[in-house]
Image: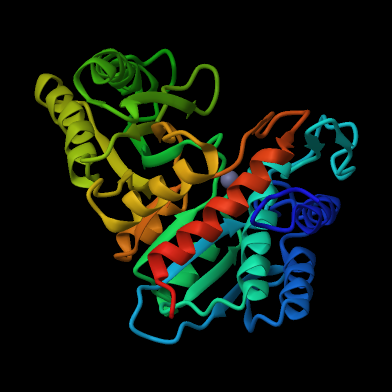
Length: 389
Ligand SMILES: [Zn+2]
């Protein structure tokens, strides 16, 4: 037996079973089954732990599970959150092995983020078995579709709230207080079709897009210098997709790009749209034949928690007690569901296990970090929700 505050054997075995269940997001890979089987396994585990839960089917095979350990009243509520879907498994040799070697457990989702689900269940089990009654509610939420469109988190905040949340995405046991957002913008230049030999009649939409790209290139050089954040690093811009023209010997009537803008906390949709619109307006001012439109395709806000909020200090204290040192304060460069919870008024921090190979061919989580995460979540719940007696 270890001297951990949580049942490490239960937590490891639970993690292994979770990794052995395929929960690839069908939005990313049409063969992915979604979260249904994961959700059922989590519900069975909650049932064994005598924790009441609700299963919420959002679409076929797409399921949220929310559980609540009711407090006695007079305390603050805390939500522990993880997503149940994973990215695809192409290129992986044994994606669902759950193989354990030394301190590592291998498989798709081990690190992102089934280790975290196991840690949450480990913390909940410890609380149930301790006989401790919290003042505030402890909510456990396991959401669908974080890796694609976040239908799970968006559905959850429509009917559930909490005073604070911990999103247990991987952080290597550092405390993440901010992350970047992103926007996908569609820019389309309009030309005029004409025979390639009739240059006085045609307007070349592809050439006009070239002018846009030249300006966006300048912007992409400038942005990382000008827009920086102490935890999240730099803002950035690139153009992942381009398509234009119909055929050889025909002036192109339209050209479309998708521009991907990564934002830092403080940047708004209005800011970014006006930055791109001003590129279009400037070019239109210089060239009477230039026509272009701008559309927002996807917008995910950047996120930053107020560093003076209670959840920050309580989580930091709990992590320091478990780790024997103050956790490092970090930011993430990628987007997470925390922004959705933050926008819903739930103060959210991000803290998760250590591992490697996120979205890569060999993925693993470090088992001792999963156990430590379980301990930290348990301590945080006691401290944040308050204990009776
Ligand atoms: Zn994740």
